[in-house]
Length: 332
Image (cartoon, rainbow, N blue to C red; front, side, top):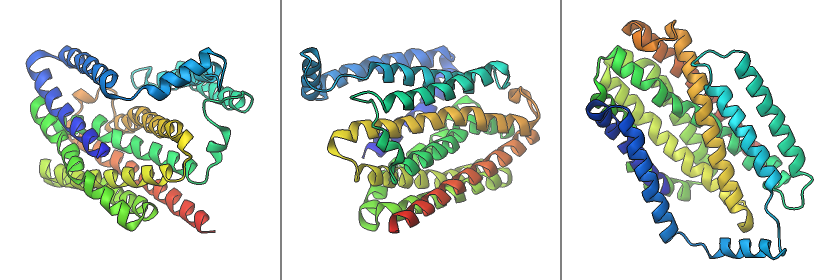
């Protein structure tokens, strides 16, 4: 159900964004997003339970119970900020600044892990990083998110430059995937409950691999119809993977650690999205042959689209290998 609601929101984003850009300009998107954020904050304040959080805060204020890991939080925030800047700074050119920021991110990650092993109440328990279920799940989650970001980074350029669609039409086509994902979200959950999370993780990833290969081949042959058909393969696989992966992880987590593990899943997904923006965008731009993709020839954009999703298929195949190896280890 959570996946379905998330997909509904994702479906509305591209279509409404296309209409807003076409009618009011790109600034309208951020104004609307700010308003929606305020509404979400009010709803969260009104409906989400806060008794447990209030109890924890009172205990900390009185010196009772675990203390909040301020050092770990600061190190994690600085590490993530450095990594995000390393992946996005430079407008497509990975230069010395990006390398320095990436080095800072690696150093920050090392310091974070070092600190977590030495504080009384770590932000993340070190044992979680070696968990036989969680560690592969985080890796797969990051790879899958990297691939899914390619549909948002590369897809609009292909639809507008190679197929000649306008902003509203691009938004409508981009909404196909989230709509399909929303429709199959509950069904994916039922498959996971009946057939098991491990098998459905592999099934979802295999379907995603087929979808990526279809995106590499069909749009160039059949245009919008080919793009839509490929997306209709990719997004159900993604929804099935998400439902199965989250179920597999949360089923083996202690009740007191569910919040942290859920946050780690979200973090791996967001890191994948950041990486996908930079890496898949760079692969696309390199194949197109210019950093100014908006001015590239339609044939070059179509070729870049095909190569990028061939690479994406390889990344998902790597995730399949991780899932299979992880399943074999659990059987032993």
